[in-house]
Image (cartoon, rainbow, N blue to C red; front, top):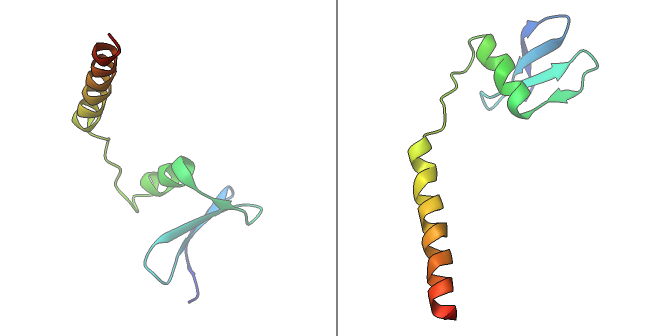
Length: 76
């Protein structure tokens, strides 16, 4: 599976892999990953980023608080 060059700039090169995903390498041919890769691909219009839903985090916090309160009650 060869990677095809999609775009090359002075700072980085973007490749499309055989599995239809993207690879980003810096000028030294070192892979760029994580948030930096996502920002580059989004800036080039190759992917769309969505903000994480704050509603998904709230139940986890409530559950942790309830567990702490239950532990305090059982300790008494």
